[in-house]
Amino acid sequence: MRLTRAFVAVWPLASLVALAVGLPTPSTAAVARPYVLVLGIAQDGGVPQAGCRKRCCTSGRHEEVSSLALVDPATRRWWLFDATPDFASQLARVAAEAPACSLSGIFLTHGHIGHYTGLMYLGREAMDAHAVPVWAMPRMREFLTGSGPWSQLVRLHNIELQPLAADSLVNVTDSLNVTPFLVPHRGEYSETVGFRIASNRGAVVFVPDIDKWERWDRQVEALVAHVNAAYVDGTFFDGAELPDRDMSEIPHPFIVESLARFAALTAAERTRIRFIHLNHTNRAGIAGTAERKRVEAAGCHVAHAGERSPI
Image 1: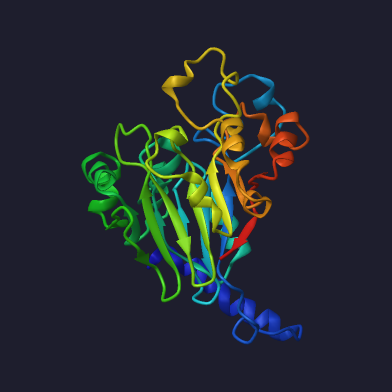
Image 2: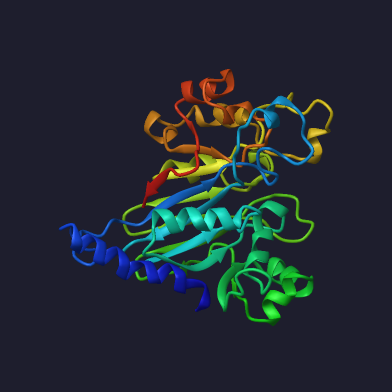
């Protein structure tokens, strides 16, 4: 498909360069295991956020919107989890880190701006992609097919919508699969799901947006206990973060609440937890702050762009 040609063209060049300097070529070198690559960690508005003149957004710090890539060196393919407003630079990051791999599809969690609006770059005004698979839940598919300009992507076959069903496995290769699971979250336009991304050697979970853990019909402790990494909602550190907003209108598990719940896990289980989807006001996103130190003292982590988790 048109989208992948630039990615695929790099592969022969990489082989020639390797031969010239006496290194193993990609075809003869040991192939790395699949991994998840973090492309961004910020809440939908990114950092800096539009219109914010506070120190959190004027210090020069930059964070792209939360997204993951599943990269499979063996098949030279990769899949995107959430198409963010930072779509272009996030594709460039994967192209730089895995130049032999081509984009093979996109999985969407839900219909809030940080999670699907990057699809616009697949249209004829930009990449003019052809038939990129986009997996989405039923209401999300209805939203995309019934609302412009997204419906144009479907009509012009820039994207091909693929069905998702809660707790139903999607095989993307013979050894890699993705399973969506429903989570409670504001549903103005769509359902909201998290994803379990798995191989025969391990798994990663991705839950960037959810209302309070206690509103879920599952136990988050069980979800994160047996995975290689758990990228979970860390939007706000605590309830004092937005004094001019009614926090009940934007419910998320505060990081301090999550740390209290995760305290019952073993140290090995806690170290797999990576908070992601941090609001621009969340000081846990800044190394060395008291908030970050509290996360680290609890044995957990804040995700960072560029980190890899093998599966």
